[in-house]
Image (cartoon, rainbow, N blue to C red; front, top):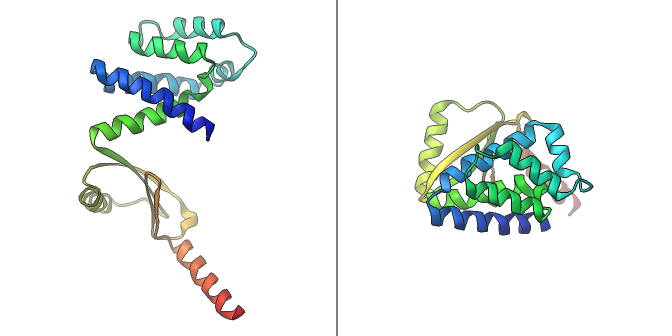
Length: 182
């Protein structure tokens, strides 16, 4: 919970500054790049997570790695995050920033899990239905999850719509067990 609260607070501050300067998309790309580098490089990620390394050392590292590659706004933000010892929250901050940026853009992210890869026409129909239902543009993230057996599991924000065969079978089993117990 604390991770999310801290991430939202920092993301809100960054988003407000980016929107004020008209740099929402640029900040999105730049912070995304920093997070991608951190996630792809175990040594860099280990340095970020090491509480024994002084903030000044991490600040110098950020300046060497990202100076000239990110805007002044993003560099200053990264330095504040390091000085405040919140660098471990960067992926969470970025996720929260994306949520704010997508909300401002009128885009909602939808996670769809299916037992097999979805055909393109199914994705298009689902996109149309969800766009009409939500009144916003939809950005899909699809996953193949064979364990759901069939059907779809759709997550929109905090809402989960589970139409999977696995869940239907589980509910049927629960009803049978309850009816037997009565």
